[in-house]
Image (cartoon, rainbow, N blue to C red; front, side, top):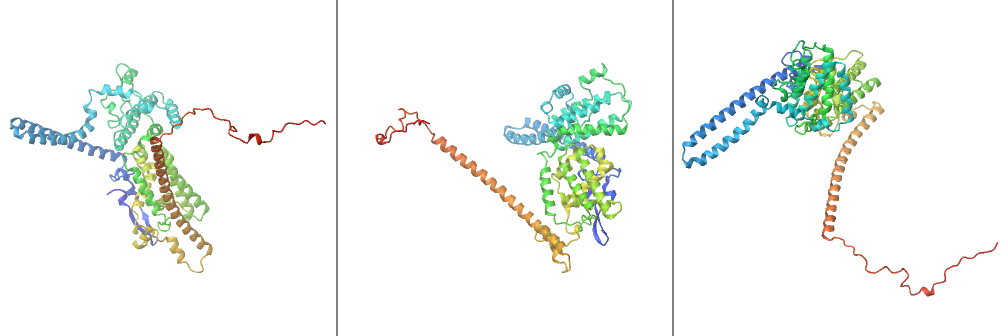
Length: 539
């Protein structure tokens, strides 16, 4: 059972509220770190361990299957040597079938074992990796140039350690250029291994091995354990560098933040919402789902926020702005910062409303309400991007990890929200979802005659705006259809005109005789009055 599916609903203040035990936010393996729905409830560390175990098991099974198919093929081939010519056709079909099956399976094995089975060609791969890739050498954007300069200036303060970090970061980016054909999960594993090994190396004291290891899954270019030629030369004939003192943890965190900013600014366009995934499909699905749930009121979610208070209303607007702004950021840490700012505005809004500090049970319903009200763009893509390429230490501990885990829970709740979650009957829920009516309209109809006219008018206007919004959406859809029809019609006319021009080309022949004067054929010239002559008058 995943972490999100373990959410517990409880009754509070004689009405249904959303309640999530804090233990449900932690890794289900019990390590104490925050879990993540994308990692099946595990934290980053435990998920990597489980992932490696599953992958090694799959590799072993594929390898055994490939060996078995190889033996069967050899036995079939041996038996075919003693068989008669009449059996050759049968064997050919058998051999073709086994070869196809073996090729399909062995391809998977080679995919995993390519790093260890190509030790002999490692030097050639390293030379290939050293060649400047087109993606790195081409003209970069202004933001990329700025981030690169900031990264270099930052590393200058660490002297030789900074030089080594810069070399390994550049080597990692060059290696990722050759990994673009891999799945996004495998590219994510490369980045996670790089983060892990860089941080581990900086925190280790007295190592005599040069800082060149960037992760077995991260870069196959260095899996042989031999440093590049340039690295060996810079360290001396032995290729061994004197031990460096360990970097303090607070500085390690700053360095990792800068590394993440540098590499993800360069990789963003290739790894954010790639075409090989269904991230875009999930974005459209959750956006459509949130749009269909626009009728949900704060009272249904037991949101302890009173937007009639100006300060609270401002906090709600800021929270919505922050969660929407997340999509404009390119670095996972910056996206997390937007989530954190949004969450802090939510806590402030609750505190102002209740005149007391907010609790976790107050925070999650309000976060769900903010997501429903803001409908952030590309929500699933941003969550997946953070999960895949953020420094894992940020998601495992601290306030960033806590708020991000709650956002994942909020999205999962929205996806599975039903009548029971909102304490509604199934009939009312279906009517609201279909747009036949809205809670605000029913509430207005049930008001007593003594109710405030201004409030009645306000809810009437809100309902009218909702209807206008639906009409606008229909008009926009029709306008897009009309635009498409016009484009198709224009293209059709252009093709027809082109066909006519090609079929009947226009030929302009030069004139054989000079053009006649305009009045050459005017037979009545002699009847025209003489032209006026200028006259001079003496003064």
